[in-house]
Image 1 (spheres, one colour):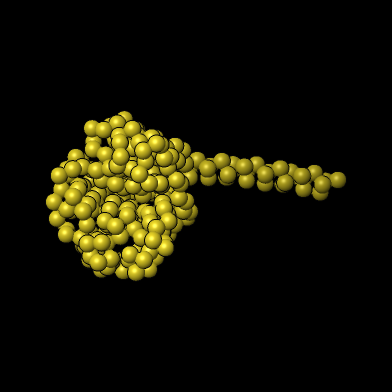
Image 2: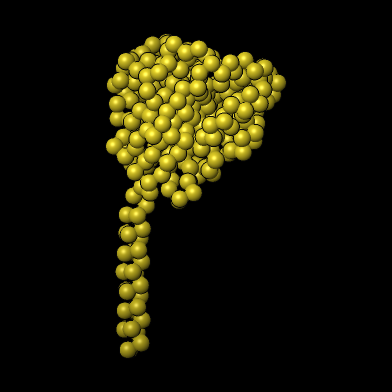
Length: 265
């Protein structure tokens, strides 16, 4: 009888200890471990059309800036125009980064879309199609990844390319981005070609919950006159820009890569 009582006591005590551990563990995971990253967004112009579809000039340029994570737009995956190249994987291999591609449309026997390259492994990857209101030129999407940093901190990083037709269409797509990305307080970054100037509703209204890591310096075309490429962070009160640069007149795309060193607290 005594042994039975002690056995029950040990079981109850063990369960209480386990519950306390799970509760404190959950609280710990909800907290952000401060971190810094260098991030980049780059529209590569029809999968390197200006470089005859070679990844080498892009790798040479990107290596100079050593980004940790990159959002890429306008990539081909094994199309006839780029002679069957898997652009994201080939560029990732040249840079020593993990690649992931997200299809937005089928194109020329292959696929066309967006990508993320990361120095750190992906925990999950998902491509979400964005709404296509009347007047949309082609299907758009957001590629959402979860990445674990060396510190153990998990972050969300996304790449997107919005439609250029009208501000109303861009606003609908940006609103959908928020639905997909602002689900919780996980440190979140989105980079891409938003095809929208800072004063438009797409940026000024729909992206107001985000911290903008970039300024209003123009990013397109090669000798830039228009600001349409962005890097954003969330929650906005927990992140800041340390440095930011537009890399103009590269000669390899009709967009300038943008790069920022950022910090989350």
